[in-house]
Image (cartoon, rainbow, N blue to C red):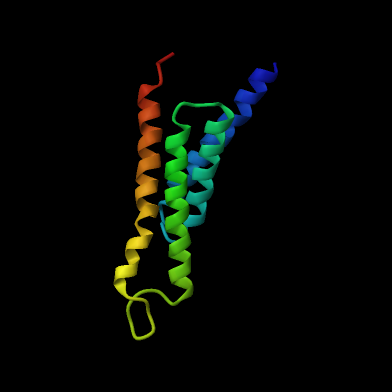
Length: 118
């Protein structure tokens, strides 16, 4: 019974994390918080269930976290370009955010494809 309950709530968290990843992509700037939370939830569930791909999900989560950190940091300085803005070259530090998002989505799709049909 406890195993069924454990599987039930982790499945709910997994679906919630997946949904947050997709919903946050509608507006990647404003949805960056949702995407970060969703990736964190997926990583948490992978650790809880001792999945084999948990290290890959950690890499995606850290990548998203670093990119979103710099996104907010540069936004607090006034953004890029313009007389008071930051030079455009610094925008390279934001690239881990979309890269981590694509990587995590790819992991989810690969897991979905590899899931046996019951």
